[in-house]
Amino acid sequence: MNANPRDDLPLAGIRVLDLSRVLAGPWCTQTLADLGAEVWKIEAPGQGDDTRSWSPPDIDGESTYFLCANRSKESVAINLKHPEGQRIVRDLARQADVLVENYRLGALEAFGLGYEDLAAINPGLIYCSITGYGRSGPRAAEPGYDFVIQAESGLMSITGEPDGAPMKLGVAITDLITGMNGVQAILAALLARARSGRGQHIDLALLDGAISVLANVGAGYLAAGHKPQRLGNAHPTVVPYQIFATRDGSFALAVGNDAQFSRLCALLNRPEWSTHPDYATSRARVLNRATLIPQLESLFAAEDTAHWLARVRAAGIPAGAVRSVNQALDAPEIAARGMIADTPDAKHGTVRLLRSPLHLRGTPPREPAAPPRLGEHTDAVLVRALALDEEARAALRSQGAIA
Image 1 (cartoon, rainbow, N blue to C red):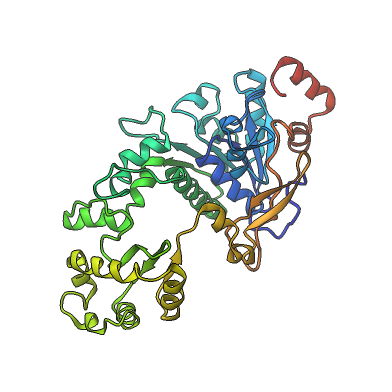
Image 2: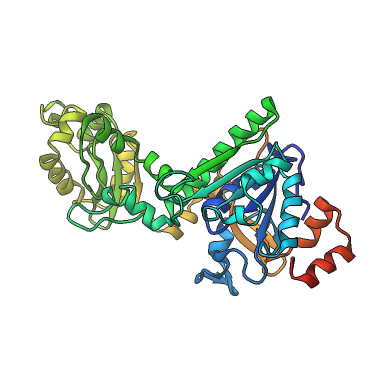
């Protein structure tokens, strides 16, 4: 793979040493790759990223979970437990601008690959550590998994039906949030380095990221002492804002302000609701949802979903069908936005991947390259970055330092 096929990409020339695996770190480095960075994904020989074995679903034995977070990267198989493998990573760190890792506290330090070790040989290195609970605090040494973080952050407590059990989101949202936070922090550190000439250590915790996206719900507790409850698909402070059943299915309705509610009342032939003291204002509707919602449910149940979507949208009120994942990915608006790429792949011919959602009109992200096979680019990266000749690489292989 030509590491940077376009020199106009925002991060062209930036080299990322990716020591992360599973989702949060790889999600971060995948975005950096989308924006033009050269990403060296360091993987253990014979095993690689944990998600290579997470299946089904798979394509001829290759995990689609791995595919989702590793486009446009180069895989380099290095044994970090071998002294020569550690030396190679240190040499790569000298050439890198950014390092991303999600090892447990102290693990990389034991290999001589901690922040202080590498900053000593590359003061400009931006070193991003991702853990469950951060590098400080009483739980810094504990492993962190998305499912547990969703539970501990309060996110589960506000997700699910009011009389049901706490529920996780259908994807590993705290991993994804932390990956996005990693991109933001790294871009900020690159800007800071442009002024100061020095890198820095970034300390990201899944729990911190999860707590931060409690957003209005968290603010309600902190500022007003309000203890939120699960509301299913309803909104704690906006009504009506939920799923409504129709004669043949259901749809999502989001009435965001009083003007939209007035238009909804008109199309439902209930104009008097828009001036009724129980419903005329957003606050009143929240306080009186118990009487308003059943009346709306009765009206919406009388007609088909298509009828209501057409009428509600025509009135300028946000509404949408409740789609399955396949319906969403096959939707015409997704195709129109170019979100799916038929990507050339050496084994499968082509593989369908998502493109980056970052639509920069002046410097658009790179076209996706197929996620790498384990160790696919070991030779290419070691030649390009470290000028190791064939004899040196063969010696490293014979020692078990690379594969």
